[in-house]
Length: 60
Image 1 (spheres, helix red, strand yellow):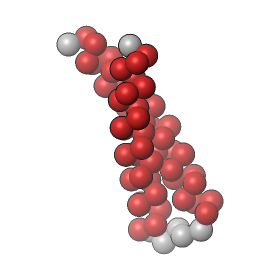
Image 2: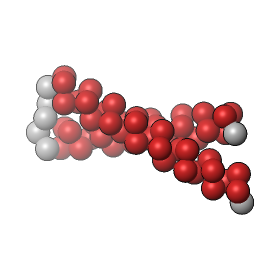
Image 3: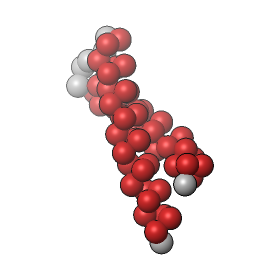
């Protein structure tokens, strides 16, 4: 399960972190701190999303 989780997180975490950066830049937050915070929040959301996806794939 851990290997599958890490594989899924490598895709989902980066994607959500990138989405967070794009959102921060779109709303006009173009300094370093808001960009890092939004990328970190996206990566943390990626952990939760990857865990749920992994559980559902294993259960299927």
